[in-house]
Image (cartoon, rainbow, N blue to C red):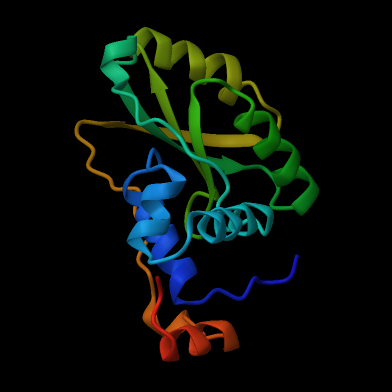
Length: 174
């Protein structure tokens, strides 16, 4: 897929949606000084080009009985593309797995998991990780506290003004 060309308005829209995906089309259009129909088209284009991949609710894990988070550091037997891809696909399908990372270093795969308790974590490890023929070693670290944010930095040097945005600068927006 070709990298989409984004202008300042696109980046403004992305920034707003990162902070609050519940904003209405009308609110977003007003914030970036566009007509609602134009704002809607911009958002649709960002979705179709794959820039906006979805909107998700941030759920309090403990509120739904998931009281423990852990990172599983996994060393595969072979570092071959087909083996790693097959293993990652199986791991991604496990409901308790939130994210899977392919990394450099001592361990090649890190899985971020959420479980209800230590017994659930132990059973998850035995049932889904340790018994896999691709796995040579697994080390698990329990997450005591987590702080995260979902907003990505908007890199100013990435923004390439388009002819339309240059024309918009000359004529005031309504």
